[in-house]
Amino acid sequence: MIHRFCLVAVLAAVLVPAGSAGTPTAPVLRLASSEDVGTLDPQAEWTANLNSFTLLRATCTTLMAFPERFAARGDAVSPDGAVAAPRVSSDRRTYTFVIRPDLRFSDGRAVTAAAYARAIERLRDPVMHPPTQQFSVSFYAADIAAIHARGRVLSLTLRSPAGDLLTRLAMPVFCPVPRDTPSDPDGIPLTIGSGPYHLVEQVPARSILLGRNPFYRGPRKAEFGSISVAIGGTPQSLFQDVARGTYDYAFDPVPRDLARQAVAQYGVGRGRLFYVPSISLFYSLLNLRSPLFRDNLPLRKAIGYAIDRPELFRPYPFGAHRSAQLIPPGIAGFSPAANVFPITGADVRTARRLARGHLRGRHAVLYSLPSPDNLRQSEIIKYNLGQIGLDVEIRPFSFSALFTKLADPAERWDLTGGISWFADYPDPSDFMTPLFTTLPGGYWNLSGLNDPGLNRRVLAANRLLGPRRIRAFARIAHDLVRDVVPVVPLGAGQGMRLVSARVGCVHFEAGVGVDLSALCLLS
Image 1: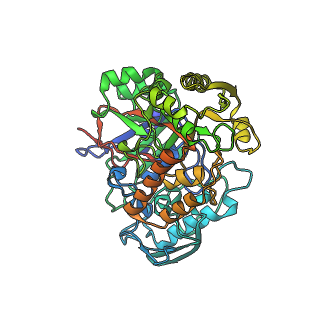
Image 2: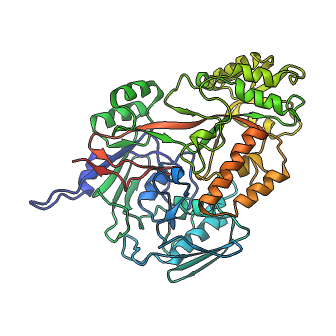
Image 3: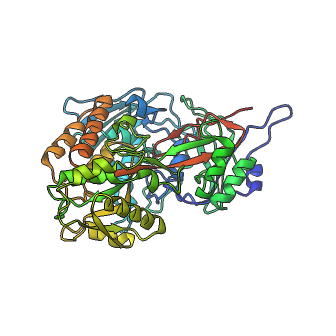
């Protein structure tokens, strides 16, 4: 995820050679970010943002990749470094890939199966991820029990079937690296790229420069002679810089205070301003152990109907997607028709009908984060639930204290204000498994849901591949909201990004960001 860098204008002038007489200079794509990017070692620890993934994607050819509009088609990924989809064994545990014969690193060396094997070895190497680190990318490869690489053939054997493996393999943490790449917990910036571009220079907290990979022969474009990234400024100043054309794109989303101005000036999806759905779910968590909600499905459903989602998101109308389902837009399995509860406003009549006779003590304890936005939303939920006869007591806690309390089965609470789950990779299993199961990996199941039948359905869905698997998870997600209601989905995050007037061909990949190799010049 991401950090910050700043590029000095003179650096681009020095490192991007001018063309000879009569030959036009290759264009430079000018990017900016208010935050540093951190290491560009794909297997090293990343931080809480994804700018590094965007840059790594441009310098990398993963085995699989995210196709455009994959959510609408039901396909999660398509081949990239592999010549085709892998051959999968009958027990769904061994995946065999054949690497493209024309794939080359930017120094001319062939990208073989060993380069992908080395990436996985580094992911699994404890040296790369000291136990003191809060996060680790090693879990991406946790299911891989054995790796066999010979020439262009790579075989991965899993401990148990995991259909989301192909989605994980599309993430930049699986960028191939030369076989002699050592393990280093501080990260080794990958200057030898396997994608359309490669890293030329990185000056921490100041600048990054990417150059073309002269040996790249894949389907993606290298429209620009180089890509420069300047680090510094604020989201507000960078928005104005992109509007003026100083930069072509800023990693920072359009600030909330400028969102209305941006929509009025550019319109959304008309060439310069774009929605970028995040792979996140915003929801109110219900405590299925509490006396109020235990064995009380009608009241849990009433909460879903009572909450006024437009009012929750009124201060940032362009920064959230109202939703009443567990799979957010941009992830395979999302459907606009899958909302169980109303997203255009509260349905108080239905909520009161469901709650009648099920209010029990008529008192609910709501745990909230202490930020002004979270407290405002908690007050709205309190008012909404008051409309159906529940008296809600709001108790705010810091982030660490809140989730410590929610994880304690003995803690007495009934529901939360809005909290968010950000998926580690764009796959429906990364919502169903951690949030709702007691399977290994169900580490964020804080509602107290313990349903062996659900566990079996999730395991069965994750044995499937392709559209069948996506449809199975979509059914599970819909049934959970309709028949169980362990959480009340409220919405999904989204941001807006602006590009300069000269840039076209804009495409965003879920979990990775803007596809730099897809960008083109309009003139």
